[in-house]
Every structure is written in structure tokens, then in C-alpha cells.
Length: 165
Image (cartoon, rainbow, N blue to C red; front, side, top):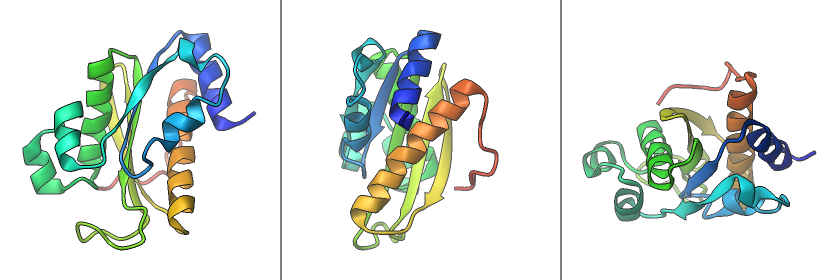
């Protein structure tokens, strides 16, 4: 069973709903989720907020935070996840923001990705350094996001995942 199938089944079993907020993955997370038959019972939809202006307008990420930390930051990922959950009134949300390349952005290296996860109004952010092509980095980000929420909902959180900003 794929991660997205497993996550959708857990969401269904727990009667929980999900939304997504994506930047560097550009909808790939939502695309993975929607491959699962019956996902509409738990997936409200997603936001693709590629610019800081859209992160602010669509998700309510404070402009002060975006100016101080940038689009690629743990606090931004947390704010994106919280904004997606609040705006869609769901139980859970996932966000992805980072630099998939091919060039550094905001002075941040290619492969740096932050994933936000919000469950019942409490958001956490995790930092990752992925390697590979743009497509490989985006795919790794999606798989990691799915795994974070799955582990959170099943009580198998991975304590080895880096928490630093």
C-alpha cells in the first residue's frame, strides 16, 4: 500500500479531514492524494501559493514573518499549515515550502525544504535537506509530508527528523 493510500485510510478510520498548502511542490502533494479512490471523503482541497504575496493572501501568513524569515523557513511552513487548516476548517493540514532548484533562492540552498503539519490547530514544522534533481526533490518532499502526518496520526512520530530552523 502506498503512503497516500495508507494516510487516506487512517483519515477515513479516524473520521478526520485534510487540506494542503504547497509551494515548491506546486500541487504534487494534492495530486498524489487524489490518486486514492474515495479520497474526497477526507480531502477538502489545497492551495498552491508559489509567491510570498499568495502565501499572505490565501493562507494568512503574516507579511512580517515572510519579510523576516522568507518563504523558505520552518515558521513559514507552520503558518502555511495553520492557515490552510483554518481557511478550510479541516482537522489536519500539510504544507510544503522550499527550494527544489536548480538554483539557490533567498540565499537558501537547493534541496532545503520545510514541511508543516497541523493537527487540531497545533502546527509543527520540520526541516529537510533533499538531494537530487528538481523532480526528485519535489517527490521526496511529498513522500516526507505524507509520512509526517501518517506518523502523527498513528502515534509513530519519527523523533530523528530534524526540528531546527
